[in-house]
Length: 89
Image (cartoon, rainbow, N blue to C red; front, side, top):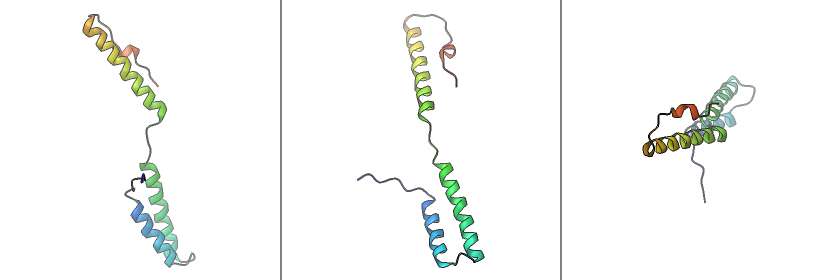
């Protein structure tokens, strides 16, 4: 029902896996293909990093605090620095 979006490096990885099936493990071509495969897998893993839930909670909290201060200042004019309320990691 729900399909995972294909990564841009999936196709080159599949091609290298096909090449590996054609070579014997003792050949230099096999070792070269394995090196390419390792590099592609490393790139794929690095490019799929996401924002941690902790960081997302911190961002949402900071945004909510800033909006509350700005809304308060709109109705009751006082001079504050919203940055003093922001949480820092």
